[in-house]
Structures are given as C-alpha cells and as structure tokens.
Image 1 (spheres, rainbow, N blue to C red):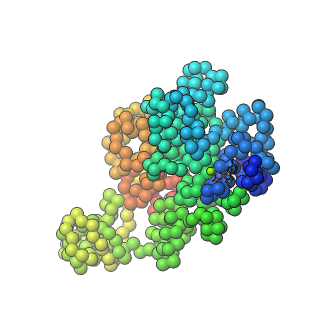
Image 2: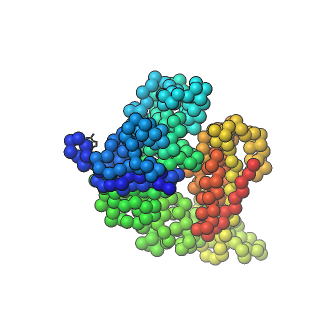
Image 3: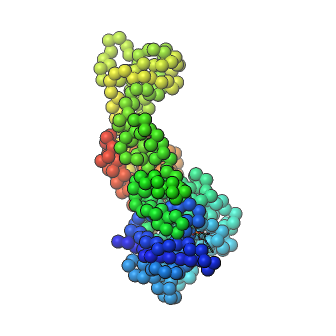
Length: 453
Ligand SMILES: Nc1ncnc2c1ncn2[C@@H]1O[C@H](COP(=O)(O)OP(=O)(O)O)[C@@H](O)[C@H]1O
Ligand SMILES: [Mg+2]
C-alpha cells in the first residue's frame, strides 16, 4: 500500500522560483525511501509538502489514498501521522531543557501526566538521550541535538517519519548512530522518508530512491536500478557510490563480476567468485620463514595462517603456497599460491532477541542468562543492534565488537570463519535472519544461524 503519495505536485515560491515541477512520488508503507539530489534540487520543498507545511500550487498529496485536507481537522490528522525532523535541529529545539522539548508535542495531545512521562521516557531512551533530560538543548553536540529532535517527533507516535538531510554535518560516528536509531524505528514498522545528497548512504540504506534534479524526478527504483544509470547520475551532478566506482575499475580488469555492489558485503561477493584468491594472499606466519619456502595454508579464527610442512606429514587437503619474502613468526607475509583449495568453514551467527523499550527493554532480560549464553558459546565477535540490546549488553559488562552496521559486519565475520553473537532489539532479530537467508541464497558460502532464548 502507498502510505503517502504526490501526483503532479508543482510548487512555485512567492518570488517566482519553480521549485517542484509535476512530481509523482509514492512511498510504500514500511519502506525506507531516499530523495537524492544536489543542493537546490527541491528536496526540502518536496518534504515540506508531506506534512502540509507547504500547500501545492498544483497537484495533490495523498495520505493513505485520501487527498490532504488543509483545514484544521485535516492538518491535525496529517501532522499526527507524518512527523518531520528538520535539517537544522536549532529550528526544532526551542524549550529550555531536553525533557521539556520532547514533552512539548505530547502535552498538546490532552494526555495525562503519566502518559506524557511514559512517552517522553520511551522516546529519550530509544535515542539514547535519557541521561541528558535536564540539559539545555543548545549545550548538546550536533548529533545529540539531532537525536533529541527525533525523540520529539517519535513521542508523537507518527506512522511516517520525514527527515531532511538527517546526517548532514555529522561526523561518521554521529551519522551511524542516527541511522541505527532510524533502522530500529523502521523495524518497529515506521515508514522512513529522508533527503540526502550522500549517494553512499542512499545506496546502502534505502529500499527505494527518487532522484530529484531541478525540481523534477529523474528516476526512481532500487539502488541497483538507480546506480546502473551512469549517464543520469552524472547529469544530475551526483556521483556513483564508492563501491560502484571501485567495482567498475575491478570489472574492467577482469577481477570482479556479477551485479554492481552497493555494500561491503556485495563487494566481497563480487570479487571472491571469479578471482582465484590463492594467487596472492596475505597470511600470518606461525614460524620464521624464508623467501621461496613452501608453507601450508589454513584458515583459523577468520584469518589465513601458514603452517610448516613437515616431511611425511599429510598435507593433501591443505593449500600450499610459496612465501615471497623472509619474515618472523607472527608477521604478515605475502604468499603466492601453488596448489590445493582453502575451504574456510564459515562461522555461526547466534541471534539473541532483546525486548524493545515498549516491551520492557533491557529490564525484561536476565543478565545472568546473557552472560551464561556467552560463556557457553564463546563467540569470537559480539554485536548489539538497537537501544535495548546495547543497554542490556552494557549492563552485563560485555565488550561489544559491532555497534553500528551490525548485520553486515556479522555476516562478513562469519564468512571469514568467526562465530558471532548478535543481540537484537525487538523486530531487528527477524531482520538479521532475513539478511543471512538472503546472503545464503546469493552467496556461495552458507552461514548457519540460530535464534536463542
Ligand atoms: N523561501 C524560498 N524562496 C524562494 N526560493 C526558494 C526558497 N526556498 C528554496 N528556494 C529555491 O527553490 C529551489 C529548491 O530549493 P530546496 O527545496 O531548498 O532544495 P534542496 O533542499 O534540494 O537543496 C532552489 O532553487 C531554491 O533556491
Ligand atoms: Mg534542503
């Protein structure tokens, strides 16, 4: 179902600038949709129509197939369904404290004091800002302000969250945190619409991309479809995602094959099949070695190690390579492969669901059980997705290896032979399983997974 849609949407600013020209834009419920375009393309103008901040000059906006009504009742319905996070948090955060800011919206909804408190607590907890409730917003960092602005919107329980350039001006860690929060909201069923000029972000994160240029939609589709159209991308002043550029260079040299990759995981798949990885490999040497020496090669704990080939030992099933230079034990060396195959055993992924905030969050899990599961399975890597899982893992005193980009990092680690345990909040556990199943279907190596607890 299209939850929100525009048909023939056209808009001119009072000074005569035509910012939108006959825009047909539709978003499926539960999707993550990117509006991608360079500065001045019309992204903000389009988003401002989706919660009726602007009224179309021409054309119609539909919410669940009903045309927008711009009267008092209609606007109330639109704004309680569509939450808007503006590009600049300073335009949004106006109250003296974080708590008062997030409570501002719910207070206008005729809720009881207890209901308001619960909504504010849950929203601040979800964005990881409850420790800052009494701080003035203007003392916070850019990323923290953005998280508070998102909390203010989610405290209104909108079905659709619209964000204008949610990662602009944030450092990589700040960007990753915002994406994690939005991923968690999406796993709970919220529809996400965001604008960006970041092609890498759109490529790896959006279910559907609309490319906007000079007020017109140039194309829409999945990232794979959009970034296959190189001429359109360069004609709109955008560039191809880094992975696509790198892939094209490798493909031209016969190293990569298959579909253009959009993530690190796709990229690894694209090179591992046609490329004989035994030609030249980096390994860690277990003993001192000399240039020209033949060594055995084994995969262990996600890395390639050399072993000594002793006369008479059975090395039939091992790959054997030649060391290219002298090295001491423990050093990285380069080996040129001669014979044999390396069939690295993939690691297992264990998924531990943790209730989300509204289901009781980290308070609803028994930390001793978590520690016991880790002690029993002794994973090489541990990941936590979503707020409750991160809080639970932290409370249990466990050191996390993956806190952002958890699914992809876990699959990559498992493909290298490492066992991974992922603590996943609420609906995110199912998402981990879907991604592993998708990878098993496309990739050659099968990863075993198990849902625990
Ligand atoms: N308040 C305004 N008055 C007049 N023109 C505007 C106004 N806001 C934006 N524009 C113009 O409308 C076009 C689209 O702007 P905008 O939607 O802000 O693009 P984007 O968000 O993609 O950078 C640009 O040409 C911009 O200069
Ligand atoms: Mg803008």
